[in-house]
Length: 225
Image 1 (tube, rainbow, N blue to C red):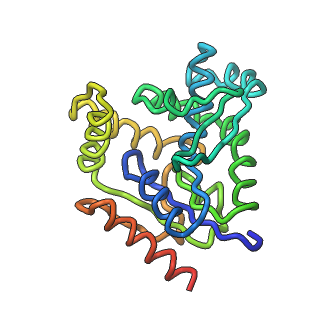
Image 2: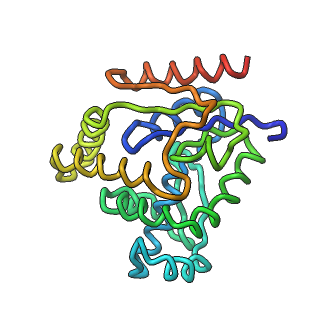
Image 3: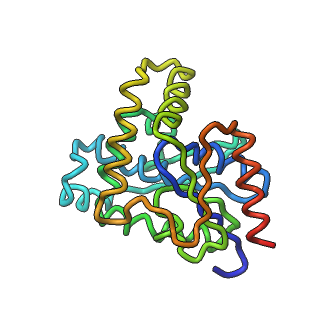
């Protein structure tokens, strides 16, 4: 791992990983890497090209045309640049979330993005969140945390998030999608969602974001001594 510190935060959809990881990274002065956004960007490219999330051959053929850059701008948001265009807003829809889940289950996509994610950790202190950071991407991370919360709690958070953005959503539909996504992520053959053996499990049900972030920071400081 060299001289840099890696904090790996994994967990199911809607566990609040991005929000909490982003805040923890800011407190620690580390670089925040949202790997879900990277996968969504690949998914978005495939969607633009009219390639289905299960079309492994089509996806493999199109990967050569994918050029992804990550820019951390003054607004603190990780901006995703796909072939020169900022697609940060476009990749954040519920449809793209489901699409990306299918696309990211393809081995060729995971291999394609693995080097990119590891390169970040070689050059920076990072807080990286995703589904398989502690198990696959950064198995030697000094700190591994598995964030979870009940499906109902996670659906409630996601529903409120969508409503705040002015998007039409129903709680029942969000909950149904959440459970389907959990099943898809934990049953997939490649890099299924599961805690690393040495990960600290943190259930954030009933927590405010502030409480969860301070629990994350306490774990990091304890692990780093």
